[in-house]
Length: 161
Image 1 (cartoon, rainbow, N blue to C red):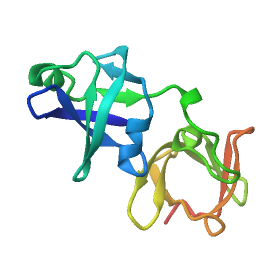
Image 2 (image 1 turned 90 degrees about the vertical axis):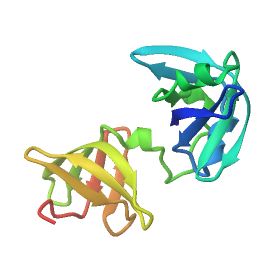
Image 3 (image 1 turned 180 degrees about the horizontal axis):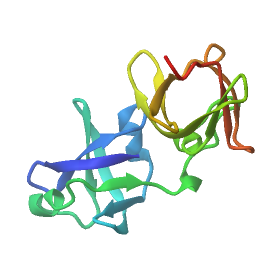
């Protein structure tokens, strides 16, 4: 869902880089599962708001700038049950990671390892046999079929692009 980037102010608030759209939606999910240096713990979101391109939040049990700064770099997760079901034809990025990517000829191009936002459209990062392949998320033009049940993503794409 995001990452804690450091302290905000002197009262223990943290600055968040949020992966949600809009960014402040990360505040609607509580508690957060926070992972730092291989350890996970749950923390309640007490307050928060958008602050420029970032989001700032007050977390239960974090009352000083030093405590907030100690959380720098921590990853923010939530339980899947906290998410609403996507509409038909929509997917959460996490559901796409790990899918096998197959072209129209049935050739396996690799596996989705991540996605990135570019502004124009999202892009799949597919780990191929020899290299990573970037494939634009363009439904109907490039992305032909997403089958979560068979863990397959069918694309109209030449891996040599």
